[in-house]
Length: 260
Ligand code: MF3
Ligand code: CO
Ligand code: CO
Image 1 (cartoon, helix red, strand yellow):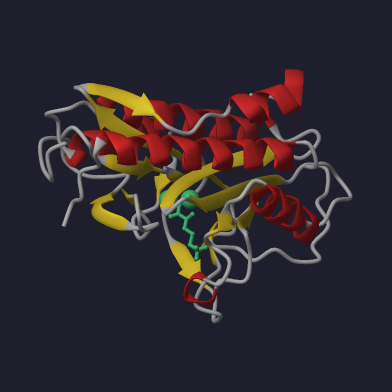
Image 2 (cartoon, rainbow, N blue to C red):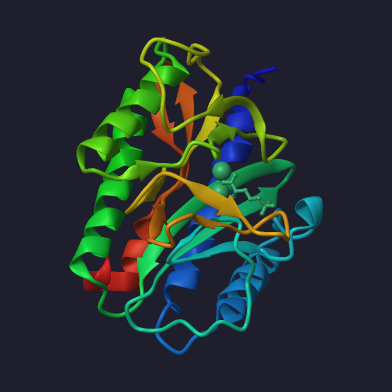
C-alpha cells in the first residue's frame, strides 16, 4: 500500500532527509586515498547518533554497516571493511537515517583522487540520470515515466541499467510501496500523488547490466567487474510540486572544486 504523508509527516521527512544529507557531507570530508571504508562508516554512525538520529541500515536484516559501501564494481550493499581506498577508485556511500520515526535515504558516488575519464563520465551521467528521473516525477505522472527517463538517458550513453535493484517509497519504513525501477515503459505503474515520498536511485554500470550477489547474500557487484555508479535522492510530491528532500549541497561544500 502506498502511504500518503500528511503535512506534519512531510515536515518530519524533511528533517530526516536533511540529517542524512549532512551525514554524507561529513563522509565527503574523509574520502581520500589511504582511508578505510570502516573509517567512513564510523564517521557516519557517530554523526547520526550525535544528532539524535538512528543509523537505519545498521542491523537491518542483519546488515553490518551504517553505510552501504560501493567501491568500483560493487553495485549496492557492500560492507564497510578494512579496505583502504586508493587513487582511481570510485566509492558510493549509501546511507539511511531514521529521525523521529521517519526515514531519509541518499547515496553519492565519490571519486578518490584522479579517476579515469571514462569512469568519471559514468558518474556524471548517472548523477544526471537521477535528475532526469526527478524531472519526470510530477504529480499526475506515473512511476514508469521516471523509470523510462532514467533508462533512456543511460542507455543512450551505452551503459548497463541494473534491473534487480530499485528505488522505493519511503516514510515510517525505509522501504515502502511503490517500487521505483530504473527501467520500464512510460505511462505504466502507480500515479504520483500529493503526499507521496519516494527514493529514486539509478544504479548504472559501465559495462553490461548483469550483476552477481555474493554468497553472503548482500554484496552485489557487476558480473563483468567493470565499475558501477549510484546516486540517490528522496523526493516528495507536495501541493502539485516535486520537492527534493535530500541535497548534495553539504557534499558540494566539503569537496569544493572536486565536486562533479
Ligand atoms: N540505502 C538502501 C536503499 O537505497 C538500502 C540499504 S539496505 C540495508 O534502499 F540493509 F543496508 F539497509
Ligand atoms: Co539508499
Ligand atoms: Co533507497
